[in-house]
Image (cartoon, rainbow, N blue to C red; front, side):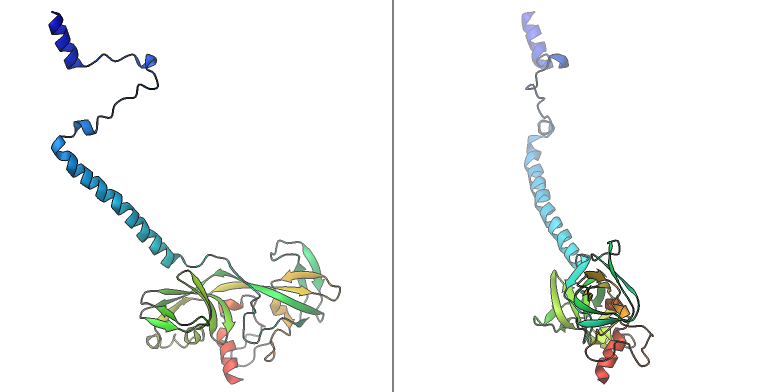
Length: 271
């Protein structure tokens, strides 16, 4: 009788204590591996190792793809930039009334007002790119910059930032910013009527806001995003555009949209 009870307890296993009386140290034993036949354990280990090795590789590919497609971090602030050929910070003359802010935001308190005809000193400026332009290349290309040639592969995208005048621009490419990149054909629009003559295609132009810090005769200093309401910005000639490209407006505060870049470029060719 005792022998039979012993055999029954072995088959049933040890009696479990009530859950209410179970101590924190009484953890259940994992049974997942115990249910797998021994001859299959090596196969499972190999599968687990392959999965573990593939996860970092997939993550690296995702990061690499993000670097190529994400583009520069925006807004991109280019301190000290003067965004066209001949642009200069010096004495400017207001052509219209201008409200000058204490900081580089339209929500900033009013610092002072400038009357039409009043002279001010333009101290410096910041071109803020809120949307980068894009040139996508269908064939390999080598673009010239002040830091040397930029080697572009087929399928790469070049991101346009601050326009620097005469067909040159500051660009972002694979995590680096390059200055004075010669993009004359794209910016001047020469590629649009004959896209086959160019290695890439202009998808969109950059959109930027030009903030200028000015000081009046009373030594008050503030910021304005309306430099188009001042004369004296262009040391190469008149501030107003002339000829068939003229829009009746001065250089736009969003000059890096390159809406007037064709006119600026054609004017530079004539001078």
